[in-house]
Length: 460
Image 1 (cartoon, rainbow, N blue to C red):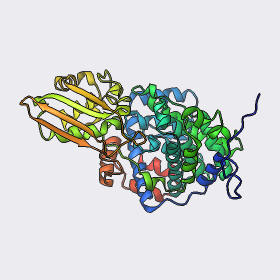
Image 2: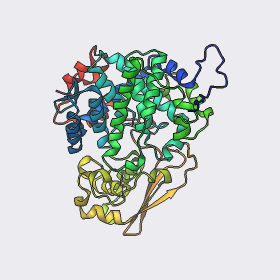
Image 3: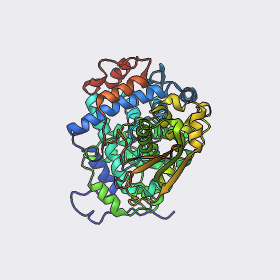
Image 4: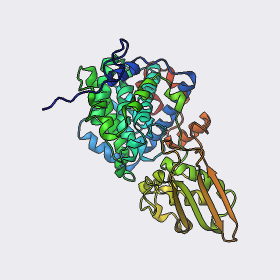
């Protein structure tokens, strides 16, 4: 077999530069500084928000089926949160991560176009059941995972995403490996090995959006990221060219040049959270529906749904490509249905899981509006940006009277540009976690000396 040559950086001969890009990433992620105070606040919020998403998702029949299948693979010490079950750590990470993503309420970030907390936190929590992890270690671990996802996202997206890869699954696997590796305090070489092993397993397809397999792909990433870190800690490693070789991740799954990868690696300074932030979702639907959902909620205050004659929505074509279910037949499809989300927001003035539970029985008023909805896809002026502030989504409604009213939205509420308060996040948690009460110590998780014990106490 011909030897696969690894691509070295142009200045790899510098004494302080590791020999390969993957080694450089491992060194940088292993040596990251403590997160800034602003980043710590975001990490604290992400923990609360995703814990609520997991507790809600684990009550679903889909999560119950995943748990039943995982139990057949063997029990273990790691909890499946909110249901009293325990599994081997990788399988618990899989079920909890899948549950967190089932209802499309989990947070997102821009450069990687992923749902970072859905993958990172379940992997850390599962690790904490088998290795000592404090709240402070978890803070640093989350920052390492986010840094990995965001910077690799800068290197490969949107080329990677637009090829049909589910980046929460692909980049998320590397992020989960970095996070759990950081919690285990792996050195640079072992961290590089962990990320490389995760990239070997990184897969997930946009073709699965609108099905239960989409959240399962987040579960696979959490499971495989944790397993990769454990294998790296045991001394296992692959070829460094898995990232930048001729048949490596970047070449095969993105096709972007190495200049972008080099720039992203050079930016790995532990400040990705400060630069990009985490977006908290206020609607249980695909984030690409959220700008128009905000528009519809605003318009619901200006007109009655029964007075609407026509609806015209405008959004980027690569956003609408993901929203493939104009006439949803079940709850999962409804979360990826732009006409349904718009109609529900116009009728109810908000969007909750109850509104999505059975779209076929949603009511004649909803379906009338769906039939009156026209969608215009526009070519993005900045295809490198997820949300271009100069090209907002627009929603125009023509009333039976002939009056036309319109709203536009550049950034959805909850995004880093329009952040929500801790009180709003706690209110969302309370709704998701019910009937569990909001534990009085929930907000102090970062000060816990034993994260596993803390999680058990607040979810009992």
